[in-house]
Image 1 (tube, rainbow, N blue to C red):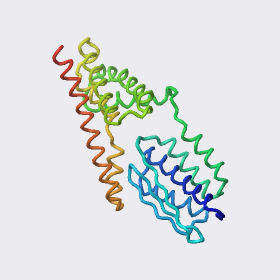
Image 2 (image 1 turned 30 degrees about the vertical axis):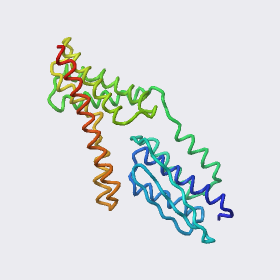
Image 3 (image 1 turned 30 degrees about the horizontal axis):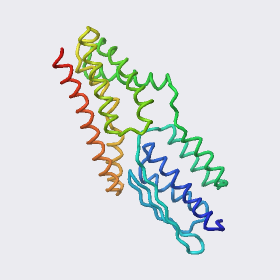
Image 4 (image 1 turned 90 degrees about the vertical axis):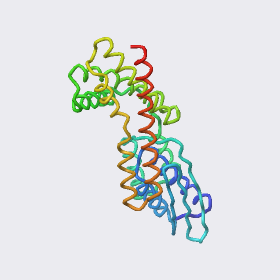
Length: 257
């Protein structure tokens, strides 16, 4: 049970930091709110009220003495990282079951949230296989599929070393699309591939915010209208940035070749 205001604030800070990390990994808002509530209840809070959208988490808790505590977390960057999300879910379940010391739980959270900038060959191969598969699926030839592979590797490297620096998400998406478009047109121009459009289609699927769109619909159906609409709007804007990146690439090289 909680004994001091400092303990109460520390528990609330831990719960919100875990919730913030979950949102940044692509978790659904209702799952994030439920996790924050469960962690606070595990440490003895009588009442917990949480409001979260994709850019903010706000929570107010009331301890056994009737004292309320409020904290907020601002979320600037988001993405998809299921491995980290799984580890965060495991940590939250452990906290609810064992209620460890706050400092110990924070140490585990810090380890989970370490940004991994090492080149992972398996993730890179996933990019390659997905791009090649989508190229063939949409009607591309084998040479088009092979041409999409090195572009997919470049997109993985950009995602690994540029996105984690905190660069604007719209700029990052447009940059990735531009690089993919330049690569596709260049390969076809020099005879490596038959149809630049098919190569672009295969690589563009790596950038499409499909999970974000699905989560937006799911959240609206679950009653989280504000969060769902914000995700829907973000996915539409990202799709427009993808289109702009490829359009600039086509106009740039199209006028030369």
